[in-house]
Length: 168
Image (cartoon, rainbow, N blue to C red; front, side):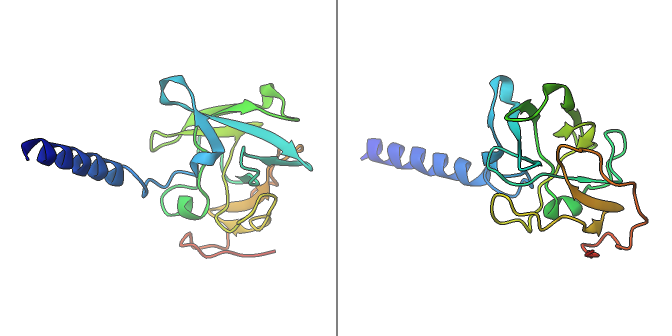
């Protein structure tokens, strides 16, 4: 009987630990990459039809107001525009010299392409979707990251930063 109680308690502890460590982190889906040695995420970036995509084929975006020294999209902005976490590696069509990463103000590591921080858009539901293209929010305009790499010059924001979007 005591052995059965010990096994049951072990199962409850394992289940509790698994449940408490999942969800709510605000991180992009794990399908963006795999975990490399040392716990750092390794994200494979590829060009597909002129668009930069993650390993899962989702379109990646840049915000014209962001730089690696001044990140505009923080806090609640990241629920709509999750940063691409981790250190990138070059996939099909991507030059390794254009990819890098930096440490965000919250301490997480974010992938960059041609010096621009990369994000996904929660409004994209399938690989290849570009529903975030041209949205003005978070102090700048969101554009699809791609072969050209440079976002348009920052336009004055018409958003109040509370999730309001201006569509082209």
